[in-house]
Length: 171
Image (cartoon, rainbow, N blue to C red; front, top):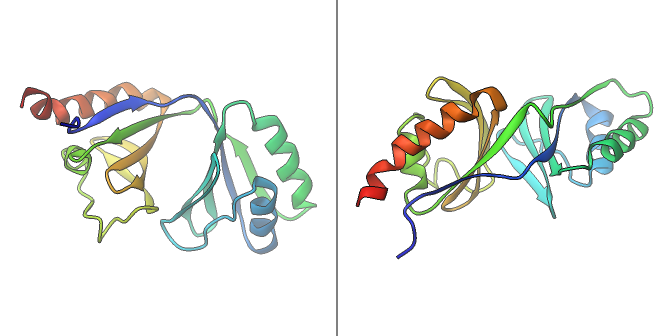
């Protein structure tokens, strides 16, 4: 029988918070290799890269660890003077994977979002609170979620997840 919920801290990654409008958004998407989603609360992926919509003019870009210098250079070049903000936040955040048939229930122990697949389908992402910590929550598969949390709150979020999944480990 598969584990009800598996929690894992993911490998380091390259992360950028980017902001812009119009031509800047298109240029950043081309340079990153993933079109930045324009639909609210949606993620777009291509290969090992992802762009998560965080607000009307803000995205979180995720790529494999070590790609920051090349991506920064490419995005900066592609902007060609268009007004935009590109900030590397690779070391600020930690990624946590929550996977399994009880993943949504475990997350709902500390988060009030409706995580039913009809309300929060695969590809949806949002900023939200998990307990007292702000996170970015992204549904990557029917029973899989990706959490981005500031490094200083990671131990707290992992502790909450451990508490939320304790009943499944005892069953």
